[in-house]
Image 1: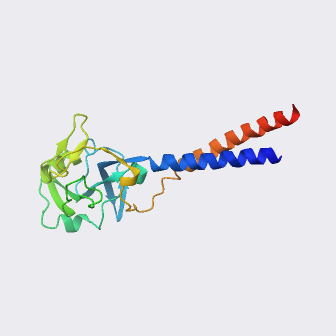
Image 2: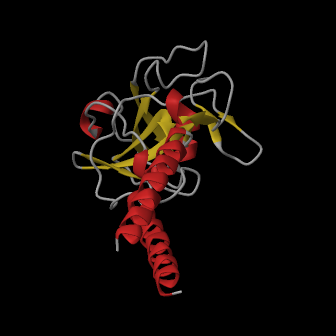
Image 3: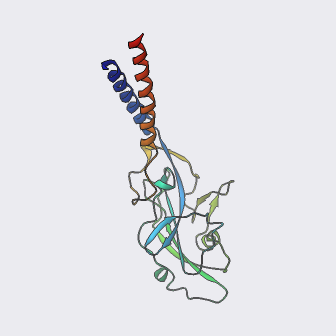
Length: 211
């Protein structure tokens, strides 16, 4: 059993080193994320801004940051409610109002050489069937999209780049608010690999012992 334990220990140590190396080279992306606000809570939007058609009185947010995926994305900062954002934009027949929160992120989020503008709120008055993207175009020009229709810039920020990959050691240290999206797959996957390889080592050692 000593040889089995030694082999398993070596495998675990090797895999921990490999996992640490993989984590060090993991990457995120610098992009605008899209959020819905209900009550006092931001939730990651389940539709794109071009397909979602918010009701009058809705609050929608956009946040520029470096994130690995939707579970890692940063919410728009601060508080926002429709009443305060659209207080000076009265209701008008034949239109709807959508409150927009535009969070341009932090200096750490910014591409090299650029400085993010302050977070702003704006009330967009649009036609009743307008999408969130149309509301954004009405209130936060100029917008910039890439050839795949990915939103690259709001109100001209950032001036260049679009969803570029960012290495883990360049990623900002700011943490997003806790989410309920479940645990990361990294740890369970690592444990699974250790279990499989540990089993292989056990059977190899057993065969050598019985040979």
